[in-house]
Length: 376
Ligand SMILES: [Zn+2]
Image (cartoon, rainbow, N blue to C red):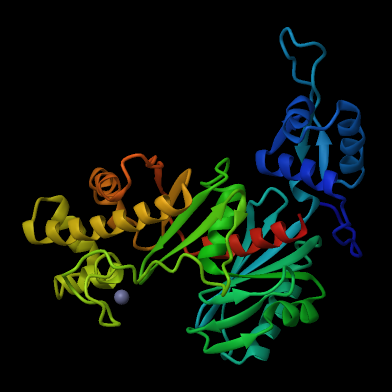
């Protein structure tokens, strides 16, 4: 552990940043790989490596032998304890915090009930939690916050347009948290933050275009296209919840006939077979119960249409499905893939679908990763 009370994240130039990012995302990289991936000369890389070693971000590991390809190539390894980042997920009544190290691994978590939904109270709670965490994590370099809501604005100054659960409208949260903590702060919609976090450090690593579908009480999607998280004009891309998937069928809570939310969310599945919890519906469907199988089949077909629409528009390399409603998608991957294929242009490529286990703490991790992305 490095103890330097006055330490702050240094200003890096672009070449230093791109080499550091390569090493962060992959844990270690040989200089030969780095030269290949960044297009830099060995001489430039030697200089940049020295910079990053001097800054304490990487160590030079053992040389890897490269059979038949000249002299061994030295390896750069991330020093995970060189910096930390704090992430906060806000719900309508609680704050979930996570600290990650420089390799984006969670090293600490804490939960607190919100004292109220007043903006000042919530910002102050974030500040107090951060102060409590600082002695154990003295190199917290930036802060990320995510929540269910629409977020717009320039990097480092994003503001919340609206958050239903908190009853907030037009809140300059990044500026408020930065003023309270003294640290660079990134704010994001929770599903979009989770998508961006998986893109760099999780299930989406290596894919330059991907979609993440969050399935639970509702359904929403996050998108990364050409290695850039899509933010949209109004802070809410990927609002797929009310896409129409059928001309008939149940109605959603807005009264739309045959819309996605009427088929594939947890409440929709439960509403279809009144009185049964969704786990029980899935269990019965897996045992061949006809009524339950019909409901699960309709949910998977609706999910398939959503995925096919996203793929048709963006040409996605990979789809990640996660959230409390994941068991719906996992009920029959075969049926889901068939539903995607049926709704997709025959010439389009159906991407692999990754059913990713979900824990609520993933959102705080994603918020912390958004802080990593902010400084890199
Ligand atoms: Zn609807």
